[in-house]
Amino acid sequence: MSTLTYVDDDIAARYGTRESLMSRSIRTLGALAACTVAATIGLTGCGGDDAATTGGSAAAGGSAPVKVGLITKTETNPFFVKMKEGAQAAAKAEGAELMTAAGKFDGDNAGQITAIENMVAAGVKGILITPSDSKAIVPAIQKARSAGVMVIALDSPTEPQDATDALFATDNLKAGQLIGEYAKAAMAGKPAKIATLDLAPGVAVGQLRHDGFLKGFGVAEGDPSVVCSQDTGGDQAKGQTAMENCLQKAPDINLVYTINEPAALGAYTALKAKGREKDVLIVSVDGGCTGTKAVQSGQIAATSQQYPLKMADQGVKAVVAFGKGGAKASGYTDTGVTLITDKPAAGVDAKDTAFGLQNCWG
Image (tube, rainbow, N blue to C red; front, side, top):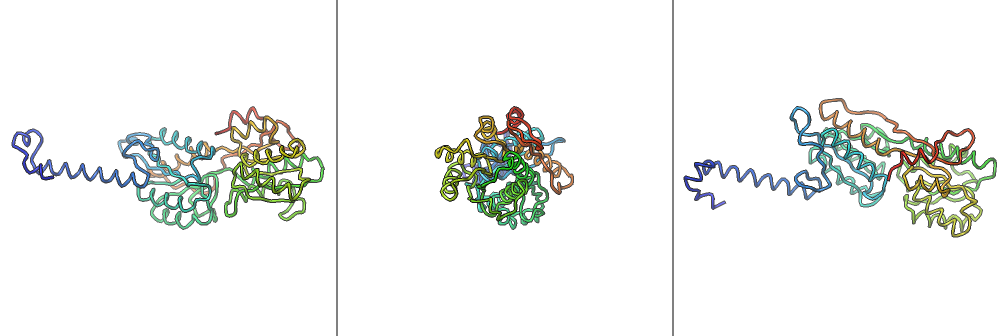
């Protein structure tokens, strides 16, 4: 700063007075400091960081772009990768600024709380979130809403569901019910010995799919036909271990429900190691491209396909509309689910894997 004291008259004449130069310098330093702080919380729009994607320099009419936050469970799960891609495309189309964050692992509630706080501080108009812990995240969401930020849950509802302004998601109970109905029809009256490879405690999406499967199959929780239940975290390696544990407990298992297709492929690997892969029916939920190909190859009998791109697209548009003076989104919006199989069962509506591959993700 001391060099500004000796600005000569010629420089002052061309660029302004000493005082104006000092003022400009202070403003510049202030802007740099703001960018440094924003970069520290991982939500900067000042550089090329993936954490912030600006869809346009300004919204229609020259106003600043609406800031939208997206918080997913992880950055690596193909479902959430595709959701982020959908949000980025929608933000670009809407001229919005997208800020993204994710937990370090599925279940990282603390990471999601930090992301909410950072996004509120950065001035987002709305946050789209796939809650890792449906209950534990609620206080942080309530603080954001109290600050005037609209919060929309994607894919997974909070508990209670009205802790967010709105929910854009698959009907996960229906997704489970569809594959339960399919499994019941495919078993054709054969006595079932069922293993359920679930998600984790405290995650609503996992419980809803599990409950839907039982409802579709026509059995209640605790029914003796369910001979083994294990949590997998939706992970392929954990799905394999869970299936191995279930086979030790009940070697005659003939039907496996899995929370998602990675868990299903883990179960298939364990069954194949025992020579059981051809006489055990595996059903699942998600409809990712890898999972749909596994249905096509016969590793999985059927899956319920959901649509993360649609969730993200509708969520971004809702926040932009709110940010431009519109009403807050409210209630539940069903983004659809379709049963995918190449071995249709009587009385159960389904599409084949050709349709599934045209609409899959990942």
